[in-house]
Length: 109
Ligand code: FES
Image (cartoon, rainbow, N blue to C red; front, side):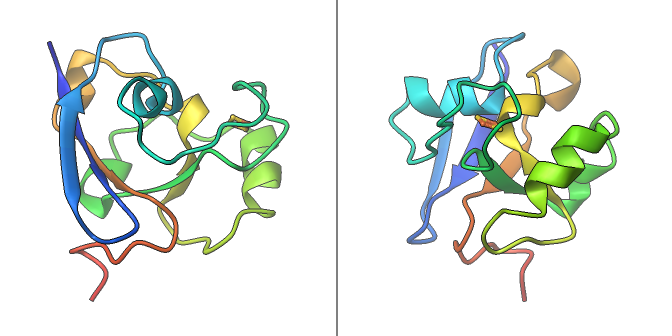
């Protein structure tokens, strides 16, 4: 089973099982990680915002325009910000790391 890592607000890292086909937002909920996902993944909020490790960002599918618009409302927007509900886990993303907004990420010097 693929794994992924969340960097939590206090900077701690949690590596968790990440079943293929689930969104990063759904995976965070399974493991009690503090990502809200208020709209349930229908691109109507920005509470599933995550900051993707720049080393992984280029491996993701392009953002849809709706995602871009929603991200404009997100707190602590970074160049590699994405909405967690729009990233679906796959074998290609095995090992991906994302930080919660406001977390001090290791790549964020
Ligand atoms: Fe609302 Fe992702 S859960 S946009």
